[in-house]
Amino acid sequence: MYSKYHKALCSTNKVYRCLCNGLVTDGSTPGATAPAGTGMPPKDARVVICGGGVMGASVAYHLGKLGWGKETVLIEQNRIGGGTTWHASGLIGVFKPSLSQVKLTKSSVDLYKELENKGLSTGWKQCGSLNIARTKDRMIVFKRMKAQSVSWEIDCEILTPEQCKEKCSLLRIDDIIGGLWIPGDGVGDPYETCLSIISEAKKWEFA
Image (cartoon, rainbow, N blue to C red; front, side):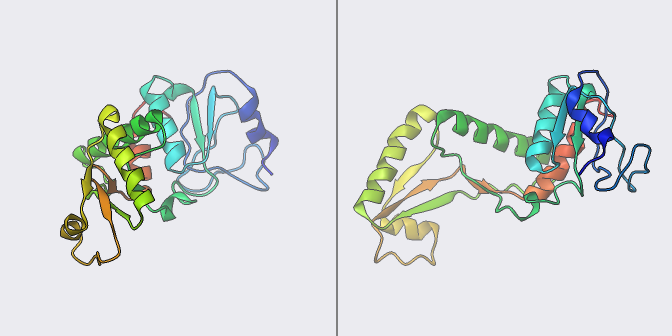
């Protein structure tokens, strides 16, 4: 349970600036000393982000980019990226159920590339993804995805079993019908990405 001091964060509208990478948790009282490397958050904020994982970090980054940095507080009870973020798979596929999700994924990939160009690590590697079809029904799904890819501007290619093996030489192809190759897919390091995004977020006039 947080102290009344921290509960007050969620009930006010006044403007303060603070980006915290730690929060005094259970048993804390107003005026208590925060752990080393952290900061006590103010009582008031326009936006309070609960959780310093990759999603919370991204929200802080984009709010800062929109000019809300001075009014945003990010609170994390342990360490940045220390929750579910650090053991996420990091797989990034651009094909999603809706166009809005596709645009979000593409925007994320662009951000990873931008961070890498600034010398900030994300672990991003555009290695592509190979999706395998072992049934006719699955192959029909791939063909529909290929048709949809035209309007969604996703680069992908229907492959024969032999072409699948060219992409992955260890693949056994005697029981597959074909595949779908998406060259824009890749993998990143969620923890490194989180730290890099937080590093950039702090530039948007957070205290």
